[in-house]
Every structure is written in structure tokens, then in C-alpha cells.
Length: 69
Image (tube, rainbow, N blue to C red; front, side, top):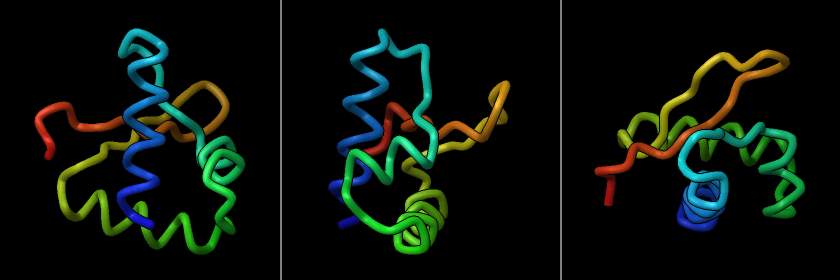
């Protein structure tokens, strides 16, 4: 499940030319997972150093860390 979320975050970022992060709502819609599952998995990915979170205009956005494997 963690790998699926990371893949969605990476594909979204690549599809926007590397300039946009994905919101948690869009991530839930794309993955089909419930928000409480997504939040715990995102916390794990963040602790593993594979994603970063930035404050967007309307919500927090999730970005992949490009050198993460």
C-alpha cells in the first residue's frame, strides 16, 4: 500500500513537470484508500524520507523526494 501511494505521488509530480504536489484528498481518490489509512501510510513515507509536505494555498501538498528509492 505504501508503494502504491508513493507511485501515485511520483506520477502526479512527473505529470505536472515536477512543480506540483498532490493533496491528500486527491491521493485518497486516486488510490481508493480511506483517509485514515492514507494518513498513517504518509507518516511512514515521511519518516522513511521518501516524501515531503509543503503548505499550499488551500491545503498541504505532498511531494516526492527525488533521490528516494
